[in-house]
Length: 124
Length: 284
Image (cartoon, rainbow over all chains, first blue to last red; front, side, top):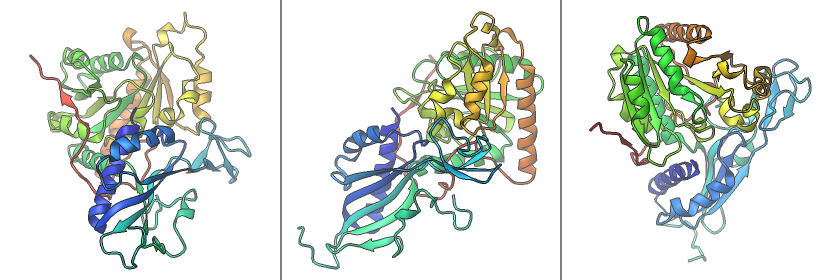
């Protein structure tokens, strides 16, 4: 489905980072996915090798962090855990809640190797 | 988005920002860079640009989403007929193949651009941008973007529009909002369509459908329509008129509006021109 488009967008961002940081390769990518982002972690993981093939981000370890769904209630003020199709307040049951987390779709962190390493690396 | 600095740090991901700041170096010389940047920031940048186009020309842009066959095009036909003398309407149609829906709209005397996505299951902001350059925006009050019929993927892509409408036809289950929460959570308005069939489809309960929507913490209004019979569309037309007035008032205040639920704060990022292949259907 659309996970391949999302993954292609991710790889383009990684390409930009490689250029900007003068990196030779990206070794790890951390992506935050909220259950309400509409993106399925497993499908994103399957799409990654296809989307990243031939780029400096190919072979990077893809870490997918799933974030909890949390809501704040505007009626009683409580913060509570929620599920994808039950986003009402866990304390008073009101539906006037605000989502605190759970819809993220973020490139959180990348780990990269540069051309000129400040410390001699034993990995090469 | 954080109101103070515009970053994407939320209570859910704050732990990723390390104590020593966004850049940390490990012993083997690798660097970790913390970005917290929206994955779809390229699309969202284009969407912001589209919204500027719409606002500059005084257009209200509405994204129609639903499963295939829920009556999006029929709703547009009835709406055009009812509002033809009052508001200038144009339509962007998204389907995998064919020019059929655009032809139905043009038959009502309204400009329509068909986007054939090929295999793509949703419209994105780049496709809409290409299409809107085929329209005379100065002569449009409402632009409807009829998304690809799909209750999953279109919800994730901002097109630059102002309002999301999700249709739920009574031939589907009334628990669709519970089954497809991302889509229904994104709705600024839920339209229960084909309501003239309620008399024969007594297993669809509009009250239950609304309850499932409220369980998503949605405050969106719910309007019931029977577009093919031109029945019960007055409340929908009034909603549209109010939205056009609200858009004009916003523009007077030099403000704009994003649709209900789109991850915010992704408007400031890099942009490249690579994108999904798509094409316009050429008329013979």
